[in-house]
Image 1: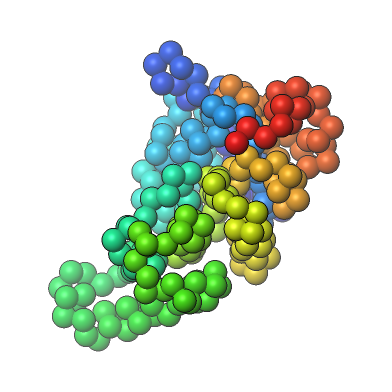
Image 2: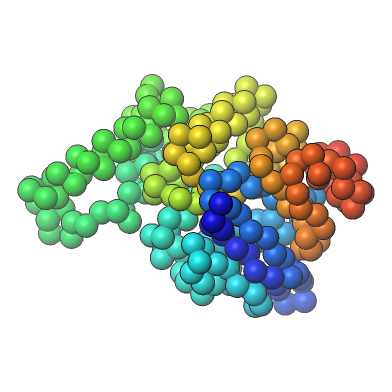
Length: 257
C-alpha cells in the first residue's frame, strides 16, 4: 500500500523541554495506526504537529508525498486531514446539526453575498451540504439528538458529535486523540464500532491515540510506542505485546488512565 503519512525524524522542543526526539514512522493508506505510551510521552504533541498546531524544529511531515511541515492547519484540513481533540472542542450553545454544518466550511464555495441572499447556487450548495451532514448523523446513530443543544448532551454523546464533525470535513486521514477517554464500557464499544465502520466503509486512514491498550490491540493494524518523546517500539499488536522495551516502559505498568 502507498504511504499516506510519513513522520520523518521530527523533533519538537518547548524551551528546554524535549517533547519529541527524532520520531519517525510511516502510515500506509487505508491503515488503522495507533500511537501509545505513558502520560506525558508526547502523543498529543505528535498529533498537534501532524495537523499543524505545532511546527517541529527538525524533521519533516509528508502527506501523500507532499511536505506539509510548514503548512497552516486550515490548508492541511483542505488536503484531507481532520482530527478530534482529547478535550472536547465543540460549539456547546449550538445544535448537533449546526456543529456538523460548521465543519463543512472548507467545502463551501458561496460568498457572503450569495449566502445571505440564499438563492440559486448558494441554495443548492446548502442543500447538498445538509444532505451530507444528515448522512453522517445517520451513520453515527444520532438521529434523536440532531437538533439538541450540544451543551445539554452527555459526555459520550459529545464525543460522538466531535467524531461526526471530523467526518464532515471528508478526511482521507483521520487523527483521533483519545476518542474514548472518560467513556464507560458501552460507550467505548460503540466508539470502537464506529471507528471500524469508518475504516471499512470509507477506507479512511486512521491514526489513533488511545490509553485503552486492549482496545488498541483489537482494532489496530500497527502500533508505534513513544516514551519521553522517543520512539521505543513499532510493529503489529502481537509484536508490540512481546516487545520487552515496551513492556518495561508501558504495558508492564498497566493502563495509565
